[in-house]
Image (cartoon, rainbow, N blue to C red; front, top):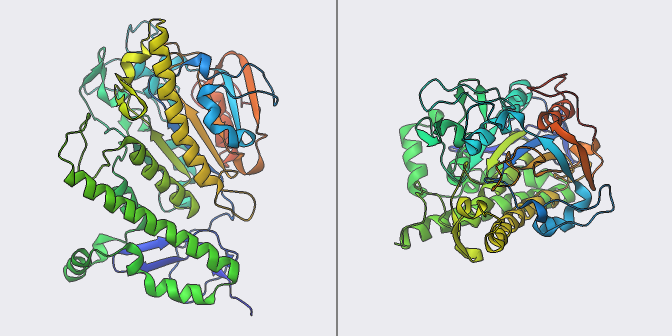
Length: 452
């Protein structure tokens, strides 16, 4: 039986819903089929995605840095959870963030570390309206390749962004809670509610709905998949066996996330105990589930080529969240100031290991999805790290930086690379820009592309 080609931009539509599709064998950039709607933007078969994950309060560096350099190295305790993906990532030592240093501005290292992490700039010290930073690498990339996808970028996190206020030694809360900056004076607020992210990815235009349609949709409260069922059935009947399997797995994944969102909402209302931190409406109380849901949204966004640029903050600058679920009742920021206490160092290492465990979940999800050439992880570049080295010293050199993914085959992975002391972190970003097709010769304080 022959099967007709469909466009890579084909979507399933229904009342108030639009579900993009993963890469299927039947897809062709030049043909449309089955009478299904399509987004007109052309796309690569295997686009390269970029993502930046920020970890607050640095890391316990003795448990982060591998001893050996090259491909024959052992992963230390914090990174041991990533053993399965050792051949698909590089640990990068020696990188520095000069913009996060004081340069005469005194304390405020946490604020500067977040503000400078993706900009490389030295933020103006102010808690007023005259904030000034730099354009972040994710927003520069979004301005150049964002037109290729439905969403130019996604900005996510577990703690809300703030536009103003005094947060860290005279620095505005805009610096401590935002690492994406569209312009020097305009931070991009992140979304912390997985349900809102889901709606951005899968709900159709509200403006296109009549009041009666909106009321009917809300009253029925069906799965987004129920609204696109007719399109899905039509497409499924016309696909080959492999594509049918891929489509079934993808739609099952969406349904599973919907069920988890609903369960999280139910538990939030049934549990009267107040959480340790303020939780806006709809955000899961469990930190691990919160992050997993956000990361699952990223997987779906990458899988459907809804965006190629994502940022995710595990916590805002100086986050003092406790981690009772792993036996650490102390605040994260408090124990990061360990003062060489062996007990506190053990606790900060446990928190760091828990974060890497959650990151391993994300890499597993990416690696499980196959594209025509390699997995979703192979076709991505994901920076995982912090703008602070050791939380006790507040240093901004020899940062904990890991790069996961092979950038569509352009990156040799499976190595621990040690660069010259004070090599700009922005050299890495310049390399990443080039690998997603943005031809730049300099970004912020970069000196040259990082050889990867």
